[in-house]
Image 1: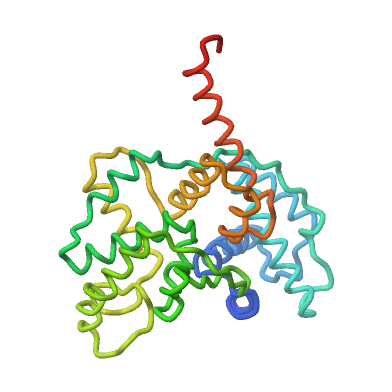
Image 2 (image 1 turned 60 degrees about the horizontal axis):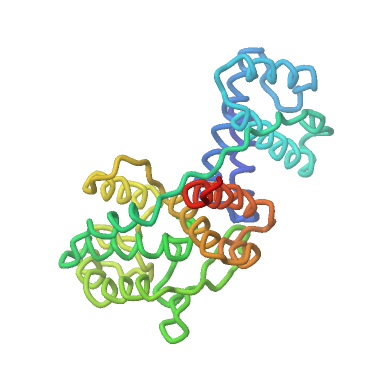
Length: 300
């Protein structure tokens, strides 16, 4: 099993250093590969080089017989295909047994988003006379106002914000960088936090950090902490909805398109490599338009 862990460790290092994947992405890869490694152990196979296409087919059957969704199965197979491709490239395998494995067709789910009235309730929760409240308000305004990913939010440094041109430098997936405009509300919340709350939080630590967002100990905020902050905001509000950084990303894109924004402009703002990733939001806007039509047209 130690040899398996060495192989997995090398791949995790490759994802982190060469591919610049986010910690959450790396965590998902590791869980998927470790799940297959446990399956190999059940089959008395102790080396990735001994994995055959027949074993892969058996594993697919096990996955389909389990309660996993099609999307989860597709992700697991995709993770393992990438992992075995890496081992093959590094000369540790002579073949990729997952190369021929077909991915199940993913179920298309419309992204969950919040309505403008719901967002207004969230913005009224944070205490603006408190350092943590100022920070949380700045996070909420930034995530909704830019549509950036949670990992991108946590990696922002103070120097990445250009107050003169009102934009922020975002370091996205695969080391790709993009400038995203900052709206007046986000800019105001960030300014309040930097000039007030952040200074108070920074005093909690003997070290000095350049990260924009700090935790209560004065250290850089983690993605997990941002999710906990959003859950806390929901609990304090009267809303009975699920919220996550990605829901705010969905909300940003949906509201932009509902107000007539160009699809390619939204693609660039979101940092999507492919337009197809952005097009899922057009289904939401079509439903929105249909609802308006049915409610407003006398012969709908």
